Each structure stands twice: as structure tokens, then as C-alpha cells.
Length: 149
Image (tube, rainbow, N blue to C red; front, side, top):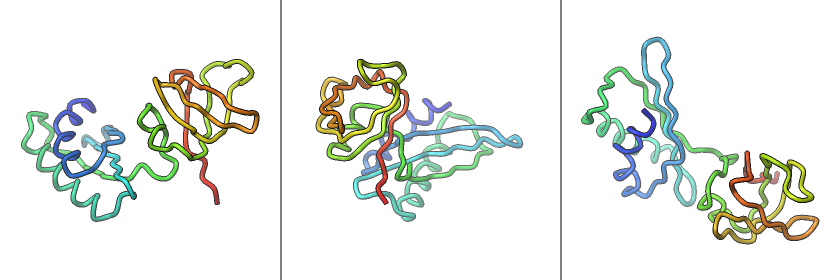
């Protein structure tokens, strides 16, 4: 269902300047719950969530998805948004990230932290306290920006 919802809403939501980060669907008490996580440069406001909610409801109600009993939630992915693809990492060049690896990579056992210098061909150039490291994105099991307080 997630892929079908994305297909229905993606074009219109992107025309409004938003990126669809993720869609989650689940059923509770006979109702379908749909959560759409959106983002845009500078962050997402409550007004942005309300606007996209109206657009998505209109699109879903007019689609052939055939769900009439659903709850729709629109949200920002938050500060600790997971980074999953090359674009996510590239947009965060210059920021410090924390990476968990799916398997050891050279002298790195399972965790590494460092500043993203660049991203090219699905490889992250990372400046760590132990020097530059080149991490293939497919070797990362979990990644997020380090939030400094």
C-alpha cells in the first residue's frame, strides 16, 4: 500500500516544494492509519502539515486505492531523521553523522562518527578523529546526524 500511496501523492506534493521522506501504514480497530513524513529546506511548519494533509486527502479520496476509513497524519521526520540514501548524505555535507555498519570495514568494527566531506557514487568521504574514511552507503545499517546541544 505504501508504494501505491507514494505513486498517488508524490508529484503533487513535490510540486508544492516538499520531499516525501517516508510513508508508514498500519491498521488498528478496522481503520487504516497513514503517516506521511515530509521535509523541505528550512524545516516543516504546522501550516505545511495542514496544507499537505488537505492535498493528500483530496488525492486519496479521488484515487482507486479504495480506502474510505482512514486516519491521515502528516509530520516532519524530526531532527534525528535517519539518513538512508546518497541524497540524504549529500544534503548534510559538513555535518557530523553517526553511522552503524552492517559489517566491519577495515579498522572500523561497527560504529563510526565524523563530518561528511562529500558524497559521490554512493561512497561517503568522512573526516573522523582518526583521519579520512571512505564508507560505502550499502555497508551502513543505521545513520543519523549528531545533534549537538
